[in-house]
Length: 128
Ligand code: NI
Image 1 (cartoon, rainbow, N blue to C red):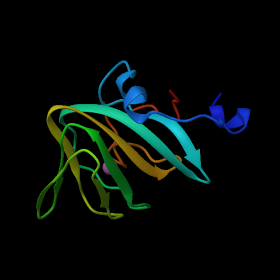
Image 2: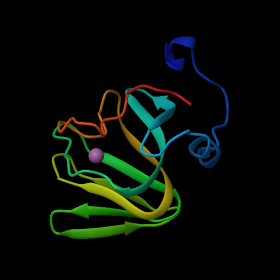
Image 3: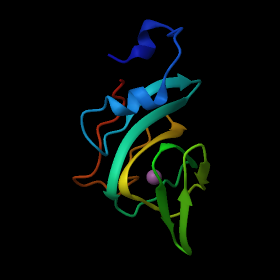
Image 4: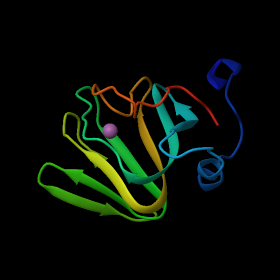
């Protein structure tokens, strides 16, 4: 059961606290929904896999640490308080040298590995 079926949560969400309480890295957790979009927090460290999302853009807001996003023509570095949007269909790979906490904004139902599948695919629709 997702929280969304219990009606709106009229609560402030502390993104850093939520991200800090996730039990393992690379496991996105939903903290809020807005229309068909989900706000997910995650803790990451190391490198993810290359993938793309043909159906949607994907936004990354860094909370703590430094996120590197590898793109076909180079890498961008995103720091705390900074936002980066990966356009739909563009191959990307997220990475960080030290643990980094961030929020992703994307439509409901998007898998973290796009259509690559495999062991790095996280379970969807898990709230925290
Ligand atoms: Ni992605």
